[in-house]
Image 1 (cartoon, rainbow, N blue to C red):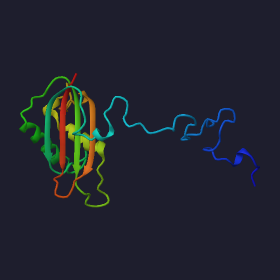
Image 2 (cartoon, helix red, strand yellow):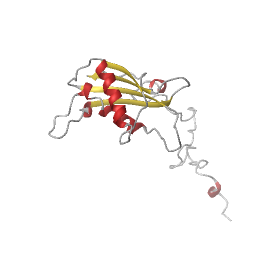
Image 3 (cartoon, rainbow, N blue to C red):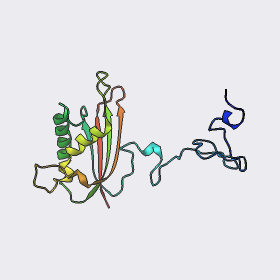
Length: 182
């Protein structure tokens, strides 16, 4: 049996007897006094409200350069479907008649993923983004180096990405918006 006293109080109930404030280490305890307590911030510093974080609705810095819709089943990097996905992205960019541009970029990518075919099929956002950016040499140009040609996606300074499962009757694909960042 425990001894009576403060040991019976959980960390959330322990208070400094002098000030009525939670004891150090009482994470999550509501503050006492005129403030009603801690609330999660509605926005991140320097960002628009959370509702506009979804790619396609994000406010990108700089001047608009390209907005394109790519239809098809998105693919993450290093899968059998990567080559057809990259070709679909390249074809959509070529159809917009955009020339590779020198500069820094801000990119918004919003994936519409199909319902998984089985429990092993997962849509990992960072891998979806990598495969898509790797196919965008028509916008970024090629990296200046002696190896095999690679898109200069290292010049993307601002990236907003999201994914969602398609609604009934909606086609899978991606919405890509590119701005030249200043």
